[in-house]
Length: 232
Figure (spheres, rainbow, N blue to C red):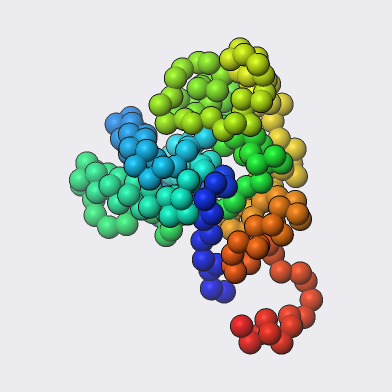
């Protein structure tokens, strides 16, 4: 089956995943993690992309980001990917590809899934058994949101500000959300949507988005395809 073209619409948050080829490690040292963060900061500023959440894992990374221009996120990911691979290969005496093809992404409904996606991203190291709590993992934006440290890559979404009237209230509310975790339904929806590139949101959200693009944004209904679909 031919893969769907990637969809990017200005002003809509996107959940992004980039994996190492054959699930190989993409970080070999602390310097690699730091270089990736520097690249993301530089490219996010250059291409006007607000990064709301991130986590750098051993063989992949996640972002939740909103581009101000439809081309911003693809340009940012291309710039980061190329620069990082050159540096990684030079530092580790290797050549060739590092990434498992192009990055995967999906559009996320802000009101329903943005905070859930942030929690999902922050809990990646916990689900992987790398740390007991999200606050213990150094390579994510979680510490920024709970007041543990300041992260220059993070641009909080306005929805985060609605969690409380003071920094302490927001930090406490978000920490509690991460502590509570996600329902299995939300976790599965977040995983499947980004892997399959379907827009994540309710029917009204998907229908509204569909008006902005010819690219199909949700899974086709079961049953025999129409003649037009078969010929297309």
